Structure formats: C-alpha cells, structure tokens
Length: 432
Ligand code: EPZ
Image (cartoon, rainbow, N blue to C red; front, side, top):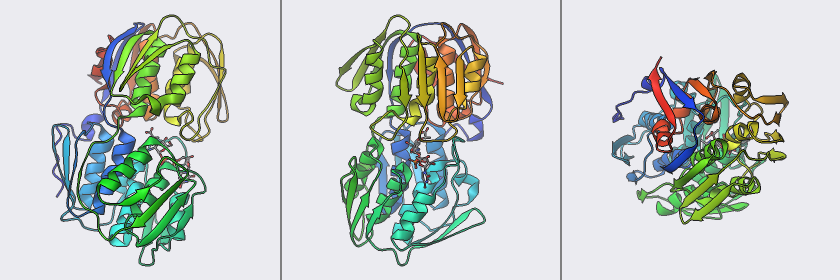
C-alpha cells in the first residue's frame, strides 16, 4: 500500500500565486537538485526487480510525488526520509493503470516497458503531461510491436500482450527520449541480444543506463546512436544517486543572463549544458567552470543571438526554449527562435507580450525584437517551462508581477522562490 509521506497533498500545489518585485540583479549561490527527467524513468525502472531500491537524492517536486502514487497503484510501497526514497517492489502487482493518474503526466508511459518486461502484459491509460503539443505515443507502440508485443488501443487505454516479446533490433523513427527509455527497460529482461538504433542521446538516457547496470542489467552504448542489451533473467535492488538537473541549472543560468549579476550554480554538470554556455559566451557572458560549479557574470544588456533552434541533444534543448526566449526578448537586436520538437510550445509568448515584449509568432518560429525593459503584469503559466520563463521575466521586469498557476512550475522546480531569494530576488508565494 502506498504510504504518503509528504506534508503537501497534490491539491496543496494548486491554490497559489507567485509574487515578484523585479528589476534587481541576481548575486549569490544556488544549488541544483537531481534531474526530474532522469528520476522519473529510474523510478519506473525500479519495478524491474522485486526487491528494494534506495534513491538517495530525491527532489520535492509534484511529478515525483505523482510517480510515487502511480507506483502505489502497482502495490509498490515507498518511504521517504529526508532525500532518501526507499521503494519496495516485493509485493508488486500487475494492476491496471487508470487514466486518473496517468493523464496527469507524460512520464506514466515510461512504465509500459518495465511492465511488459516483468509481467509480459499491461493495461495502461494514455499519458498526459504539459500541453505543448499532441505528444503521440506511436513510436512507443510501433517499437514494442516490432519486438512481438500485441497492443490494442481502445477507450483511451493500451491493452498490451507481451507473451511473444523477443529480443531483437529496433530502429526508432525519431530519437524519442521516452520511447528510448521505455524500450531499454523492456529489453533488459528479454532473453537474447537487443539492438536499439536512432535512439535519444540525452544525459538522462545515460543515467538510466547506469541505474540499470547497477541493478545487474547487461546494457551499453547510451549517449551514442546505438544501445546494445543482452537480456538477463533477473535484476536486483540497489542504491543510486540520480544526476543533477541540467534544465533547472540552465534555467538559473538564463535568469542571471537576463537580469544581470554574478552567481555560482552549484552541483551542475557544465558538459550537459554545453550548447547553452556556448551561446552565452558568444553573447559576452563571463562563464567559469569550477568542477561541478558554473559561475556566470553578466554586466550590461546582452546582444541578441541571431538564430536559435531546438533540436535533440547535444543541440539546444527544447526544455530551455521558453527561458531563452525571455532572455532574447530583452537583448540588443533581433532573434529568430525556431521550436522543432513540439508543435505548440510558445504558450509563454502572449504573457510576455503583456509585459512589453515584442514577439511575432509564425508557425513554430518566434521573431523577437529585443526591448530595453519589461513591465510587471498578471501572467498565467501554461506549462512547466513557460512558468519558469515567466519567473525570469518577472525578475527582470520593473514593478510587480503575479504569476498564476504555479502548480505547473512545482512539477519540476523544488522551492524555486527560496533558491532565487538566495540570489537576492524579491519573490514569494502567496495564497490567492
Ligand atoms: C521528454 O519527453 C521530456 N520529459 C520532455 O521534458 C522533453 O521536452 C522531451 O523528452 C524532449 O527532450 C521527460 O523526460 C519526462 P520525446 P518525451 O518522446 O519523452 C514526438 C519537461 O519540460 N513523439 O523525445 O515525451 C513528440 O511529439 C518535459 O521536463 C512522437 O511523435 O519527448 C515530440 O514532438 C517537457 N511519437 C518529439 O517526438 C512518440 O511516440 C520528442 O518527444 C513519441 C514522441
């Protein structure tokens, strides 16, 4: 039975606003927690064994709280003390995963692979997640079918029969992060050799591979074009520390670049944000790397970057697109920013225009003319990263900004107001 250990219920995250008095430089030090997008597939991967797994550096964000509840539906008990999360799979059951929880988060689909691996069957409702596009799961489904799974889609559910699942070769139509991860977690328990091609290369994939290896899986190649897996009969429990969150680190770096200041981002792996750091160095930011610390110093208003487009890793990440768009909206000059991964990930733009930004959208391209100042306003978060971008805009803007729907931001940022107060920001959370 799932034992809720948090003082915050899911609804607690709902009824609040974030209030900012902007126009100050950001100076100080902020630490980065573990990566949401690594933690979620790793939590799903825990069901590949029937023992205990201890994840050492848990992050208090609602997506992880939700994943605990979803695992609870499979009779996984989880106990949190401090940042140490112990999950117990000894009483795991192959229960149906209803839409009630799965439709709240994209990551629920990551359970399909491990469920097929463990039970050779699964009934799981379609996933949900931030409204940044249609977010189909056709690549997931096509890949599992190519390994012998029978999947019927009906009434918003996937009815999956994996009795004939066999190790084999799969080439993904597109390097989907989630499909890569779900496939990895299925093939580790399929007898024989599986070869996954045209896979995603994100650092989170590499971290998942490290976790699976610690559980006893025979898997290699993550981070490259091809992952090779030799299936084993059984995996065992382990202790594991998840990699730092490169998107959270990039968000704080872009906040300093936008507002000006001098900040040390502690616990960040610079090579995970190489493209971002290269763009910022090109814009005359002072960036110093000291082991797992990134120091960024920014004086005056930065020049625009002419062209930016989002692409799979190691190119510029879609998860920093909204935050980068805010920076470009106050730079000197013009920027053309193209979003190639998701078809509607410009939810922040109408809110930024309310604050004085000069942005014109045409399809998946934003044409930005940098303005000297933004002005505080009442704005509405539409998704996780747009919400983070609005915080940056509020920190930069003259006057007061109120951000509604901060529950989107709580999906992926632990205590962001306190962390920004460490950098000198005037920001707080208040009841509506
Ligand atoms: C993961 O989502 C991340 N989420 C996203 O982060 C991130 O933006 C995305 O990867 C890309 O890097 C988690 O890891 C929990 P994809 P995922 O499958 O796996 C299309 C955040 O803000 N596609 O790589 O859903 C899809 O529509 C979130 O933290 C299909 O067409 O991303 C998109 O256009 C947002 N069919 C593109 O591929 C499929 O079956 C990339 O999607 C699967 C994906």
